[in-house]
Amino acid sequence: MSARHLARLFREQVGATPAGYVERVLLEGGASVTGAAARSGLGSDESLRRAFARHFGVTPSASLARFRTTSAS
Image (spheres, rainbow, N blue to C red):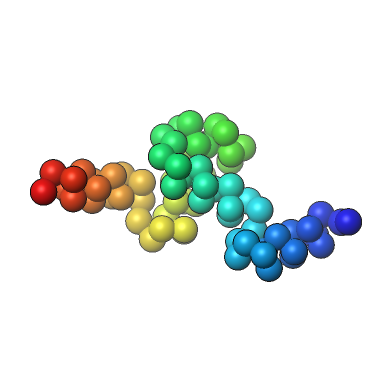
């Protein structure tokens, strides 16, 4: 099976590309931006910040601030 065909099948079944899935799992799992960037192979914190914003619509720091506000209430 080619990598392209595998990616197509993965997207059909999971609803995301393999890379997108890895990004989402790492970020939703609570990994720090630095730790998630290192584990995912994205190469830098900035690359991961962009991926986070693309998937969740906010930056990691904005998301953290929102959760801190919610848990304090």
